[in-house]
Each structure stands twice: as structure tokens, then as C-alpha cells.
Length: 306
Image 1 (cartoon, rainbow, N blue to C red):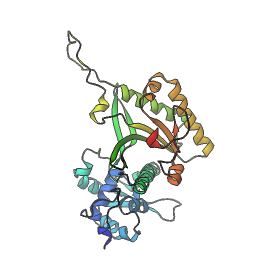
Image 2 (cartoon, rainbow, N blue to C red):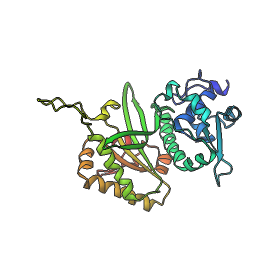
Image 3 (spheres, rainbow, N blue to C red):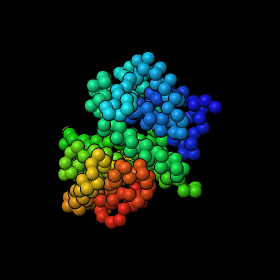
Image 4 (cartoon, helix red, strand yellow):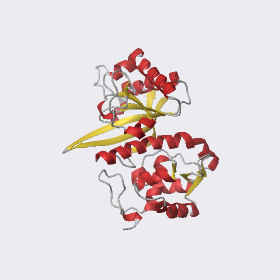
């Protein structure tokens, strides 16, 4: 059995064996913007060796569709990204339709985006590994980075990623969605907590018609705009890393304080699950372990039970 015909896992994480590996690599780099060789292996061929990817990645580079930067102080770890030609090639692929085109046009641009982009993908891989372990469904295309929505007054809220996850228990299939914010402690705790206000604005936002005469009788509300994309407003998960445990606990306290003190956030929190966890805890104990601090208070829980 060749590397391109490895059987899919029970959770469906591994893509269909009918898809050529080079096609999967292009799609993964388009979806996630950037990935190390090791991350691509965990994403597309968990359990295989790096040799599986070396040939296909080399050919993509020779064809001018992908390139890499060497990460500093990493034993020459390569972070791969699509060239402008690679981004154009994948733009209209079915799995990627509707994704905003943010191609990385140079090694310099890649280096600037590397730390945050790779940390967001690390978070996805923690959920994917947990799904394989549990027999749930969460694959490479069930994690969409850089999703933004309008919140009125010409402003938008941008999530680091939107997670789609199907938890399977016997014949029961539970669909779960989440906005994921990955925090590397590069901004103040207060600025991080303000993201909760942006999400509360999205939760309540209903655009008003412009330039139309006011109706004589009130018309039924069409509902908030998020209903265009989600049947239920996604839970909001903050994943923190790149600081001491004391600092990260303080940032979680800031998120809890915002949830309690801001009227709109507090109202949203009555209906939308909100949680925060440390990335290293997700990697060590799995996301479905009780490592998530509910922002409304209480004992740590699995993210699925917030």
C-alpha cells in the first residue's frame, strides 16, 4: 500500500485516497495559509513518516506553486506556503470556494505571518487528534481560518478560525461550531477581552434597511445576520499560549470580568457558551478534557459541555 492510498481513519480526518497527495497539499496550504512539514503530515497523513511528503513538496516547489521559509532556532524546520501561482490555481476548488484570497507573496511576508498562523494550526491539530481518538468528525476542511462578519457601523469582527465538529455517540450526531480566538499574549489582557464585545455585537446585529421609506405597519424582524451562516450562534473559545501560567490565568480573569461587567456580553453569555483554555493543556490532555474555564464562572469543563 502506498502513502497515497493509506486508509482513512474512522473519524474521516484523512482525505479521500482518490485525491492525489499533491492536490491535498495545495488545498491544505490554501486553507490554512501556512504549515510546517510536520503539521502537514499530522493534518493529511497522521501516522505516516515525513518521507511521504518530501517528494510531493519538492515537486510543488519546482513547479513554482509552493515555497517555504526556514523557521529561526528550529533545527531548520520548514514552513510551507503557496506562491501567487499556487493561490490562483486553488482559488476555485470546491473545498475552498468562498475563502478570501490572502496569498503570501514573498518569503518576507511569510516570515511576518508565521508565528500566529502556525499557532492557529497547532490549535486545529489538537482538536483533530482528539476527534481521531474519540471517533468524532473533524477534518482538514472543518477548520476555516480568518473568518470575518459585519457588526455594523462599517466594522467587522474577525475570528482566527471557525471550527465545525461532529461529536458521535452511538447513533447520535451532535453538530458543534465555535469561533476560536488564539492569543499569543501579544496584546494587553484588556484588548483581548474587548473581542467579547465585538462578538456580542455580532450576536445582536440586525442591519437596518437604508434609503427605504418607513413602513406604516411594523414588519416582522428577519433576525440577526449570523443566521445566514449558522443555525445556532457558535460558542466562543479563547486559546491562550506563549506566556507563563500566571500571566495566562490573569488573561482568563480579564475575560471573565468582561463577561460579568459588560451588559451586552453578559446577555449573550446567557445563551452562548464561552470558554478559555491553555493550548498546552489541549495538546497534553485533549480539548474534550475538563481544561476549559467557563467565562461565566464555575469548574473547568470539556469544551463540548460549556
